[in-house]
Length: 473
Image (cartoon, rainbow, N blue to C red; front, side, top):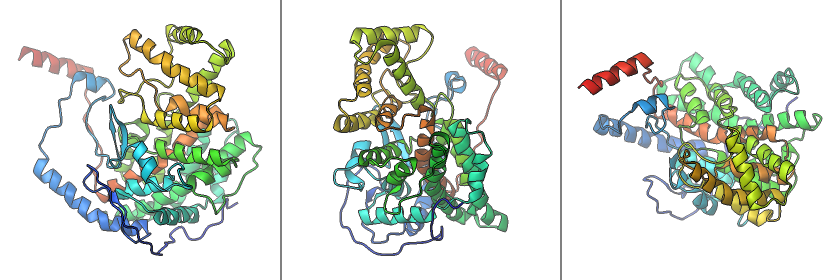
C-alpha cells in the first residue's frame, strides 16, 4: 500500500516571487527573506560556502580560547552546564528560553507565515528559518509545503514492519520501527557506498532529511489509527499544510485542532543540542550514519521517561488530581495533593527544567492559545491553578533550581480538549516535531564537516587520584 500519492521525491519548484522587507537582529546572518528563489536547496547551496569559511576562520583565530572549567560535578552530573557542542539552529537561554536562529517564540509567531491571518506559524516556515537563518515569505513556505507533500510517499514494507509488532506495543516502539524501515531508501547510504566527496555529504543528507520530515507524519498517523481507530487510515489532503495534514490524518477536522498542531510542531521542533534526543541524533550522525538511522536513535532517547514521556505523565497526573479531588478543587486541596505527591517520593511532572530558570516560553504560548480557544476547559483551569500553587511549594522545598512550569505542563491538556485523549501516544507527536530540528542540524553538521564526536571518559579511581593530586598541589 502506498499511503499517499506523490510525485518524485526529488522534485523542485522553481517559480518566482519577490518580497522586500528587512529585520534587525543580533544574529549576524539572520534576515528577512528577500530572494525570489522558492527552492530551499538552492538557498542552502548559496549559504554553505560562507558558513564553511566562517567556521574555518573561527577555529583558526580562536581555536585555543577556553570556554570554561570542567568540574567533577559536571563529569558525574550528566555534563550539566558543560559547553561542548556546536548547534546552529537554536540556542537556549536560562532566562529567555529558546531562540530559533535568534528569534524568540513570540517573534516567530509574529514573523513566520501562517495558514490564516493572526494564525499560528506554519512548521514549514520554521524549517526554512532553521536551515537558512532567514524568515521566509509566504510563497516560499507554500512551495516548501508542496515539496514536502510530494516527498510524502511511504512504501508498503514500512507499514508491514509496523504491523509485525503487537498492536499493544508502545506507540514510540512502533514509530521508531517505521522510521528504521524508511532507511531502506536512504540517499546518503547509496551515495556513500558509491563514493562521494566529503564536500558533498550535505546534499544526500538534505535529500534524506526532507524526505524523512515529509514522511514521519504518515508513519505516526498510521500508528495512531492502527492502535486507537481500528486501523481505519486517512489519506493526506493535498490542500493542507504540514501541521494541518498531520492533524487531518490523525482524524481531526477542527480548524482549531489544525492550528494547535501547527503551534505544537513549531514549538517542539528544536531546543538546542544538549537534550537527549537532539544530542543522540547529532552523536549518531557524527559517525556518518544517515538521517534515518540518526533520527531513529534520537526517537529511542525521546521515549525515555525523563525526556519525551514527560508530556504523557503530566496529563495522567492531572487526571489523578481530578479523580481524587474532583474538578472544582480548591487551592488548599491542590496544595495538599502536591505535597502528598512530593512526600511520596515522586515529582510533580511538568515543572522544572535542566537549563531554564524561569517559566518556559513554550508553556506561555500554549497558555495564550488556551485562553483564546478554551478558557473554560476544566483541566485548563486546573493547570492555571497549578501555575500558582506548585512553584512556591517547590521553592519552599529548597531542592529545585527551577520551580516553574515547562512545555510539558500544558500540551497534554490542549490535546485532550480537542479529542486526542490517548496520553500514551503524545511522545510520538513530540517525535514528529523534533524531526525538523534534528534533521536541520544534521544537514549543517555535514555541510560544516563536523567530526566524529568522541569525548574523553574517566573512572572514579582516576577522579579520586586527580583530586588528591590537585589538593596536594
